[in-house]
Image (cartoon, rainbow, N blue to C red; front, side, top):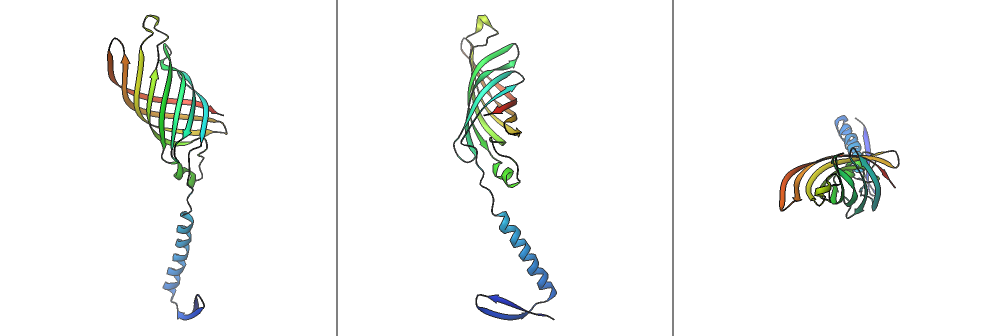
Length: 192
C-alpha cells in the first residue's frame, strides 16, 4: 500500500489511499474541471440594431430590429407583399421577437450575429389597399398573429428566415370582418 501526502494550507496529513479511492479522486478532479468550465457560459445577446432588406416568394421588405433586452428585439418592417402575385399590398409591421436559444447557440460555438437564432414573436401587420383591386382599393387589413421562426446566416451579410404562425385577421370592408389566419414566412435577406 502506498502512502501519499495531502496538503491542506500549511498542514501536511499522511494518509493511505486505496486504488478505489484513487479512481474516485481522479474522477472527481476531471468531473469538477468539466463542471467548472461549463459554468463559464457565454451570456449571449441580440444585437443593438440590425437593419436589412429581405425578399420572399411574393414581396420585398426593409426591416430594423432594435434591442429591448438580451433576448428580445423589436422588429419594425415596411414593404410590399401579399398572398399571391395577384394581390400585392403595401404593409407595415411591428413585431417583438424573443430569441430563446441564443445562449445555447453561443455555447455550442454557433453564430448569433445578426440575431441568428430561433424566435417566438407576436406580429401586428397592417396591410393598406390592395393594388390589384382598383374598385376596392380601400380595404385595410390588420393581422395579429403569434409565430415561431428561425433566422440563420449565410456568409457575413446574407441570411434566411422561415416561420409559421396563427392569428386573427381583421378586414374593414363595410363593417368589420374577423377571421382566423395562418402566417407562413420564407425570406432571403441582406444585412447592412
